[in-house]
Image (cartoon, rainbow, N blue to C red):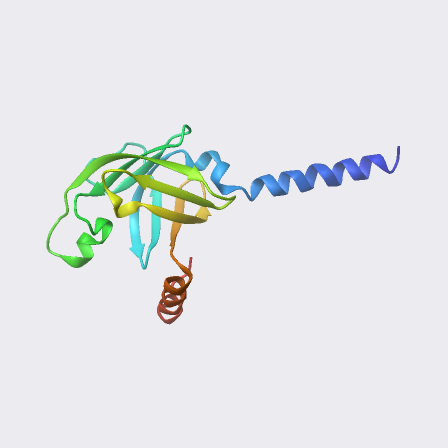
Length: 154
C-alpha cells in the first residue's frame, strides 16, 4: 500500500503534465483573436471580445469551424506591407480547422486561401496566440535563416 500512493501521485502529475502540453485542446484557443503582428509567417494575435469587421482576425469554434476576417486579395494579410498607404478591405470567410498534433493545427478556407496551411501554436495564453506557418523542408530552412538574421523569436 505504501508503494501504491507514490506511484499514483507520479501517474497523476505525469498525466497532468502531458495534457498541459496539448495546446490544440486548450480552451483558450476557442476564442476570437485579432491579428496584431505578422513577421515572416509568424502571426501574433491578441484576444478580442467582439469580432470587429474592420480588423484581421480569427474565431475558432469547438466543432472544427473557423471564421476569418481576411483580406480579399490573394496576398492575404501581406497586403498592408505590399501597399503601405492603402487600407485593405476585410471580408468574413468560413473555413475549418483540425488538430494535426498536440501543438499543430491545419486551417482551410475554401473561398480564400490566404490563411490556408499548417500552423504550429508556439504560444497560447488567455490573452495571446502566436502561430507559425509550416512549409516544406527547404522553404523552412530559408525562413529559419531569415529569422536568425532578424532575431525574430517564435
